[in-house]
Amino acid sequence: MSGNAPFSAAEYDRRLTLARTAMQQAGLDAIFVTDPSNQAWLTGYDGWSFYVHQGVIVMPEGEPIWWGRHMDMMGGRRTCWMGHDNILGYSDHFVQSTEIHPMQDLAQVLKARGLGSARIGVEMENYYYSAKAHAVLMTNLPDAQLSDATGLVNWQRLVKSDDEIGFIRKAAGISDKVMQTALERAEPGMRKNDLVADIMHAGITGVGDDWGDYPAIVPLTPSGLDATAAHLTWNGDKMQTGEATFFELSGCYRRYLKWSGKTGQRAKMYPTRTTGYTNDQETQFFR
Image (cartoon, rainbow, N blue to C red; front, side, top):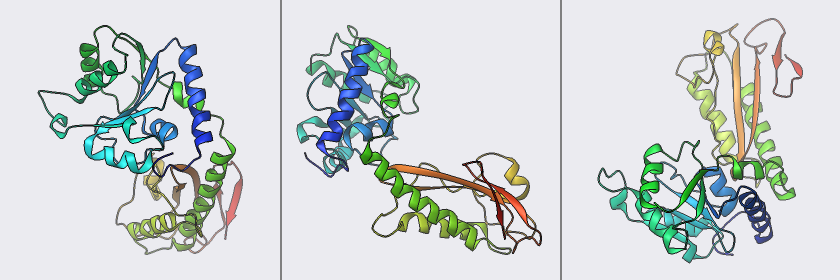
């Protein structure tokens, strides 16, 4: 294995076998995967580059192919388990051009591997596979059949391996630390952004040797009437006595995330005992 992928060759072989079985059942010769979490699951790729076109090609045999922007190809070599011949990059002149498109390059990559007239699955209901990308790919692969394979890889990720469960347990430990930090630090007069800074510091420092990764969701900490709205982030307002705050926080270890949620009023913020709600549906009392 090349790069610094977090799992063993046997684990990646297991994942490829699952994906290929699903491909065969769907009548596909290959899939092009754009969901960043699916890319990481299949190859180990871990870079903040999903804002440009990139993806993973899986065929019935051989290593998968990671394809993306040339500068991100270097990150692929550092994080993917495949050989460098299967980590490909397109030139920067394709990026944000109104005259050419990265999918033209991808079409040539697919043709070079005998997929010019193949049945290829693409993730059509995915944030990272645009309508323009699909149209350009169809135009440049006129003999291929592009079919919707949204969720094909995601469903293979449903049952976690022992190695994955180990990562999730580490993420859970970080999540516990993050939530405990929020509950201990929150107090009247504290600016919400200062509280979130402490929360994020706890999440990134992690627990012991289990360092924290950036989670898929930022800390959500609405208070008062803001807590009646979903998915509001923080501001610079000071926390108030008698004002309830909802905490929706996460711990993350090497792209594996554990979510936690609580809502309530700490006694130091309100003189009476009140109830809180947790994601495991247990009622707790904060004193």
